[in-house]
Length: 93
Length: 233
Image 1 (tube, rainbow over the protein chains, first blue to last red):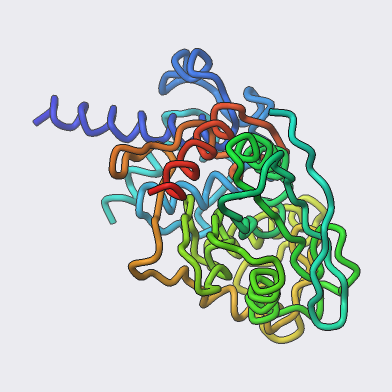
Image 2 (cartoon, rainbow over the protein chains, first blue to last red):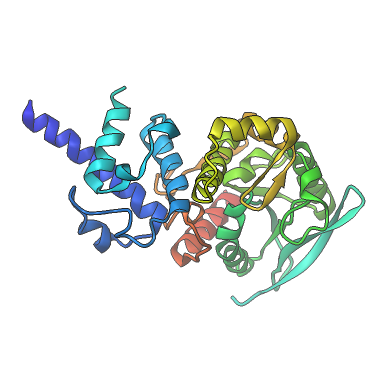
C-alpha cells in the first residue's frame, strides 16, 4: 500500500515537473535537479507572478482538476513538494 | 531556402488588413492559410510560424498568416471585434487569396471554418484562454493592492467588456470566447504536441505557454514536415 502511495506521489511529481518545464522553458537538466524539497517561488527566476497564471491553468488542463483561486497562496509555490501535494489533493477530490 | 516573406493584404469590413505571405520560387502547388493563435499566444509563436512559412516555401508551398481585425498591425479597433468578425475575416481572406488548406494553431481553431481541409495544433477552448488572462489580471491587480476576484472580473467583462493582457475585449467577444470550442468533423486533422498520430508527432516546445516570445527550431521544422506530408497526402 505504502509503495503504491509512493509510486502515485512520484507520478504526480513527474507530471508537475513536466508542466513546470513547459511553462517556464526549463531545460531537462534543470528539471532533473528538482526534488520535493526544491524551492520554487523566489528560487526559480522564471516563475514570476504572471507565469503562475499560466501554470495554474495548465495544471487544470493537464491534470484534469479544478483550481479555486481562493485556495491559491504563496505557500503553495514554496516547494515542488507543496505544489505536488496540492495537485494530488485536487485530483482526489 | 531563404525564400522571401512579404506583406500582402486582404479586405474586410472596409479596411485593408495585412497578411504575412511567403513567395515560393516556382508556382505554388498549395496555399495554406494560417489561422493564428489568439492574443499574446500569437506574439509568442509568430517568429516560429514565420520560419514554418519559409521552410514550406522551399517545397513550393505558399503560406499566408493574416492579421485579424484589431490585432497586430490592424488599424481596426479591437474593442469592436467579435469572434464572428474574426471568423468572417478568415473567410474573406480565404476567398480573396485562393487558399487550398488551413493550418490553425491554438485559439486559431475557434475561427478556422472556411470550407477547406484543416490541420490543427493544440486547439483550445476559448474559456481556457480567457481563464489564463483573467488569472493574470487578478494577480496584477492584487500586486497593485486591489483584491478583485476572478468572478468579479468575469461579471464586469460580461457587462461592459474588459482589458486583458493589453487587449480591450468587448463584452460580446468575451462572452463568445467563454462559450467557443473548436468544431470537429472529418476534414479536421487534430494534432497535439508530443503525441503521435498516424505516424506523425509534432516535437518541440509549447511556446504558447511561455511568459515571453521565444523561437524553437525543432518546433518549426516539425510543423513544416507535418504540413508538407498532410498537404501531399
